[in-house]
Length: 227
Image (cartoon, rainbow, N blue to C red; front, top):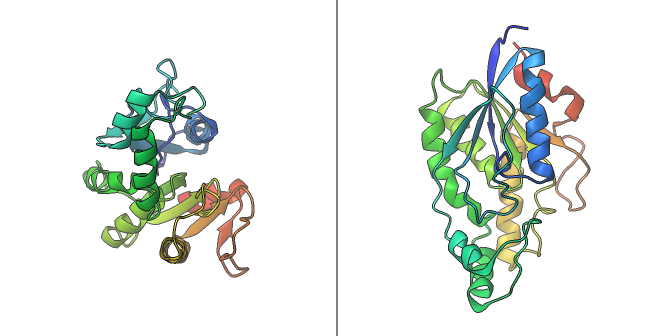
């Protein structure tokens, strides 16, 4: 089938980053062309110390992948402490504990928000512009890329895909009441601004109501790719 639309997907999980989140996006990228859609992936430039990094993991053939630079400060800590195949550190040294504390207080919604500026800059230079966008979490900050692009492309259709709800991604719990209140504000802002939101399950945390435009995963392609 000839492709009729390009859909840009912003994610932190795609080969060579593995794990359940990666498998999910790989499945989209592999089968979207069958529905006349050309996927274009945008992700942080991977590093061997990243959780779930697998050097032998490759994306599906023919998928266009853009690796956007990311100066992740936590990589230095993980490189020195060691990361297991499951994405968890093998030791609990002083540098790791300090790094974890800093990351906890950068959870607005998470420290990976530091990548967003580079991501937005790369996407606005994309050939042909951005007409259809999917942001998929975790990390929750991925959806803030969609919010930033929406202000630049008023006609863009945007699907915010929550593999987990905003607060289910916050483990351990957010450190302060201010963090919790600000994250509720960010979550609501994304839900209100996105053309549709998709969930794989109902969130345990409150904040979603019946009026929220939650799309079932079986119809999200129609939402994003409608003419």
